[in-house]
Image (cartoon, rainbow, N blue to C red; front, side, top):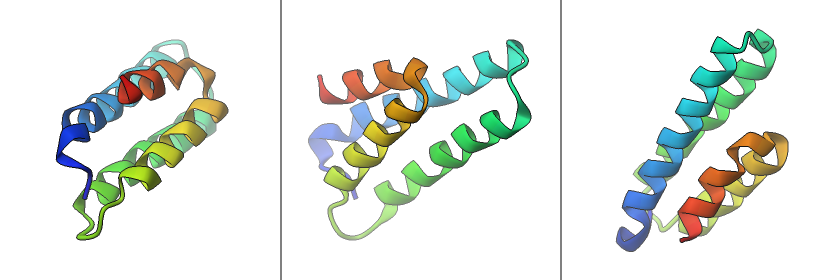
Length: 81
């Protein structure tokens, strides 16, 4: 689960990553790179469904995505607002 106070921010972060993936597809980025980003996006909702609090895991994983895909850094920043 995610701390209820961060739930909206978590959903918004996932949305931001999906938007970035769509932009990458329009820009004809490699399928491999796009697949990696989508794999990351797919993992995040699973953390939200866990019974235990996974807020820090979500934040850490999101930060990792931001490092690997700098154009997704805004999703990290918005999560922490």
